Length: 293
Image 1 (cartoon, rainbow, N blue to C red):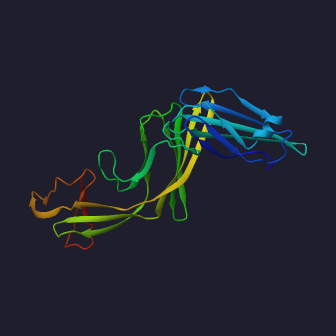
Image 2 (cartoon, rainbow, N blue to C red):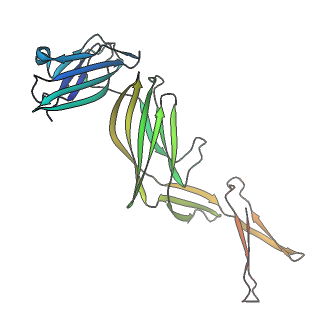
């Protein structure tokens, strides 16, 4: 406490107004404001306020002659001496002026267009039954050079949690990560024709959340803006397949041949057939087991 801080910033098409607190005495207070044009990549002359001029303007600082519908970075430093102690506070903000046809001042506005979502299907349309994907994408083609999204992903499970940090840079259109997890399966016979359905539900993990920070690094200056945390339930999925159907078998030269019905349109490389041959005469012999893929 005892130091001035930004409360909010009002934007208009060609100006912005910075509102701050008024904490502590003003006789030794110094306010410095630096504006960076994030799109044209230039820094405005530093504004340094103290003494009588600061006393007249304290708590409300107007920055004129700006471009409409334009991104700017605000750096403010407040320095004060209270009871012989030096207090120093720095903060940055990202703001965007209003379009030219919008003359009404609004509160601080930043709208980098992006989306983050949880899904099961990959780019080829194949369904992930062992985990989920989290994808972040830019929605606008226009992105400021040096901007990025810092995404902190949390997976909330029973008694545990895991997290991962992902960075979506301005040069990329999107980024996807895969999160593996244990599942519970409920198997049911669909129609008696050797087709089965698996209902796949997360075993212990129920929710994925993410925090997003919009970052800009322009001319050595770092600006950021954080967004509220968003959460999404981890939904289950289903998968269907066919199991092999025994059609016939025969013995040729002491070898057993088993013929099965193949559903080639649905079988994958991961499916396998296991044959078990048991000696019905001798109870002491172990069964013969052979797997085929």
